[in-house]
Length: 377
Image (tube, rainbow, N blue to C red):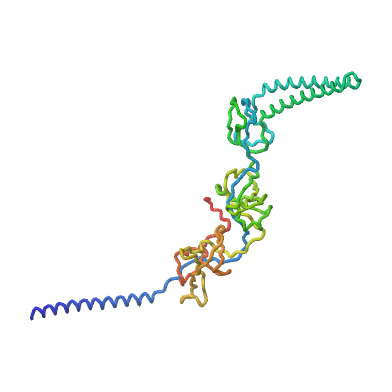
């Protein structure tokens, strides 16, 4: 009986201690709740930009490939040994400028003999004409002398043509590439000598979807953005449109010509191309840094005031989803979810939440530009 009494007393003591500890913890939790309810969240400092309407050039974008207006591999027409190389690799040449001379010593000797025969045949023809006028020789003799003279002249012209073919000149003005032959080398017909490219101006070829056919015409302006450089875009115009559409891609082949001062562009490079349509397009724009990107959609924080102000009188944020369009420079077009004139938070949106009170300090706002030029670009 005494044992049961001692157990009962012990259990009662443990329960009493636990009850006391629970009461103390309950009082502490109530105190923390009351304290948190009495705390006021300090407004977050933000920068603000106004959604505004502007007009952007209405453009069609594509990726194009550059092609020389005139370009070829200069090659030998006839076999023969290289006697003279008259150009330096990489230099600019004029149309008709001598590039390479093959050995024509035999042809020059044959030409001298042909000139002599042509002169002799010409004198014989003149005498035959005089004698024919005096009825000393017949018409058949005169015809033979005329044929002999024409054959002599034709032989001379044939040898002249061979010498001209072995005297290789630039067919048009352009820039030469790397030399592919050496002096003393025997060339075969069709063997490449050097690349010659006329690159100022230069063509750009690109494709556009078939639904834009009715908006395209020659003379429309284009801008090319070289991906290999950080230079300004290069302006040009459309010069040709293919009459047919590619049946595999349902796209139209377009060719434009670009100014290439300084030869920044080279054949074979690819560039980003924008075709400028006649009418600029009205768009609603905001800074790209104002957009909070998330898997469930893009959103912005709009600045609300008046009835939506916090207890401290500060404006509060309202998060709203937006539909975005084209991005240009530091701005992005908004296609839906926002109205012109609404103020949106322009920086640091990842640390904001819906209903948060804010204060505005645009001294911290960066300069937003359509064509930014970073100093370390």
